[in-house]
Length: 311
Image 1 (cartoon, rainbow, N blue to C red):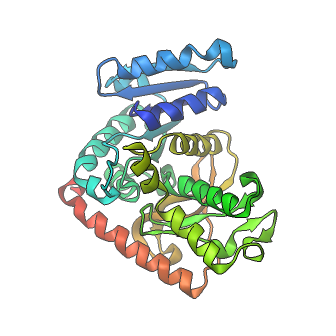
Image 2 (image 1 turned 90 degrees about the vertical axis):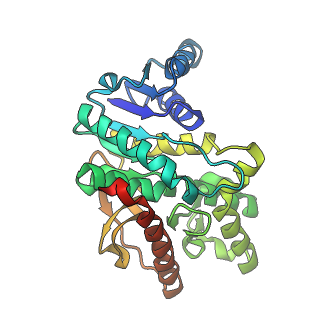
Image 3 (image 1 turned 135 degrees about the vertical axis):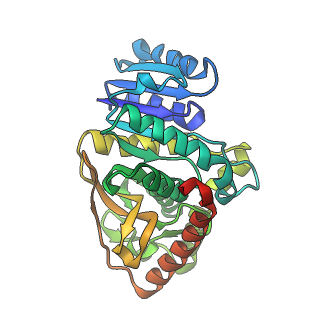
């Protein structure tokens, strides 16, 4: 099983490291436009093999997509990261051209690959990839909900003072500070609704902290986060390559599901060897439906800014 990751920066390299260490794939190709950068990252990861005990082949490439040929999954992290005070939406004009070019190069060399989109604004870049490549919608997946849900469960864990691995919860909607929807009503601790342990005010704070989770880290680090995003990508890739049929919130193309069409936005999906095996229709209440519709409107407005990139 072969995985290509385009963009050998913090997120891409962390993703490659996690996939290699967890033995998710047999071969990983890191691609970057900077001369020697991907090669250096690949060599650095390879030099941990004897101490960490894995045998995954990791190679780097400076913009040579021939080395990516035959990939089962391709991951696009290309583009500039967010800087303090910058929204994901501001990245559209810069990142759209990069993502479209990368996606076309990847498809040419790996015509059967499943695409995982990480570049921001993630929902819009997922939509652009779907529209540009003309692939079945199950093969284009935006990673955002995976990461947002991990942050949601982390904040729930901190509020409950209980292990995060005992907590279930998901975030749907757009992957943005004002568009994501942490489903506090459905979150649970070992099967028990978290509302039995946390007050309404506490749950509201958890949701608010989740929504600005990325911006909080950007403010602290001076750039976008990478450990949790990289781990979230590896989690999603693992579910695909090993046909795990996990339910994971992902940004996918909707055709009437959740009352929305012609948009990529986060909804719960069953993820397996074919990518999106099924979109799961969960029973949202009226307030949640209203929030989802508002989120979709905001994402669609960003898509409108793609302009000529959709041509």
